[in-house]
Amino acid sequence: MLFGDRQTFALKCVETHSADHGVFLGVSLLVASQEIGDSSEISPAGVIVHSANVFLKYSGARDLAPCDSRTAFEHLHETMYGDNWRGGVAAQYRARYAVHEVFDASVSDQRWLVFLVDFDYESRVLLGRRDAGYVNSQLVPRGYVEQVLGELLNWLRRS
Image (cartoon, rainbow, N blue to C red; front, side, top):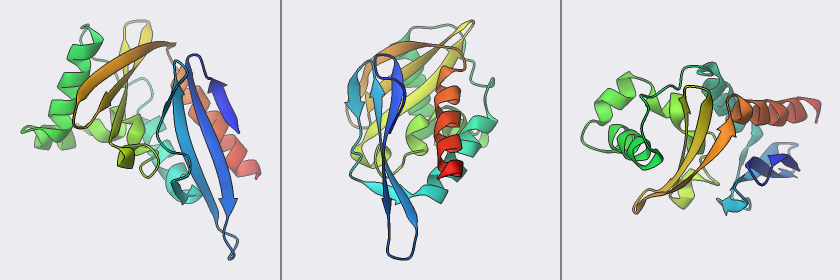
């Protein structure tokens, strides 16, 4: 299944079932047609549902002071994984900004960092590697990533 527009931001999902009727998902992200993650790495669907719901709870609360994408990425990376990580924990940065945390096994475990930030009337998906820093960014309409996650959750509820 594909949710969203691969030219902008999309989720590519592979659903599998276990012998005990468990549902598992492998998810990779498509950002500006670049595939991020490994959809063959699967997670229980319930874990993804929970993580997506936590992420969606912060819709409208991802504003950063206006800056360029590299600066925003470096600020979030340092606040979550650098010396100031305690401040990031206190401010709920992982739950608020980290799209890669929703898809831990297939994206985060592949050492990708994917952040969603809002600046005025636009949002940006920021891409980087845990060990190599900022890679690039993609402008998306404000609320678009949340809409795509909502489509995934609705699909999971129906299946």
